[in-house]
Length: 120
DNA sequence: CTGTTGACTGCTG
DNA sequence: TCAGCAGCCAACA
Image (tube, rainbow, N blue to C red):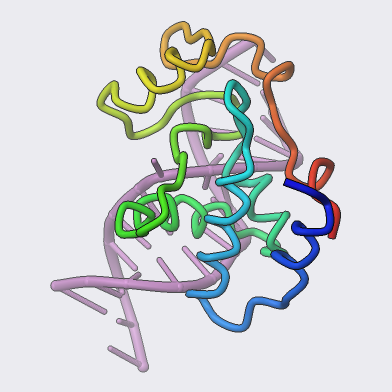
């Protein structure tokens, strides 16, 4: 996907929660295979000051989306997979991400920062 | 309207 | 290092 398309996609100001959720979903869809990001990083990317919990809620709601959202690529700021019954962990393993005791191995290396990767 | 609850985070000792 | 905790804020009862 080109930077031009990214501008078209993200050059709008979310006006309500649905817009914010959509913005979050759009960014999550951009996380490459084999990379992960955090709830807080996504919150910053969409302009929420302390909205990490909202991002968590968005992840929960994402199951209703028509276009799939790779929520397994979103973990907490410490690199741990939270509230999972093995499903998201399995998805990550399929993508080549290593996990020990629910924690992403080499979290820093596979971390994908939306603010650095997306041109607004 | 009030209180509680989280797929969260950053400080602190 | 790391457990504990305050701050966070949209949903929900």
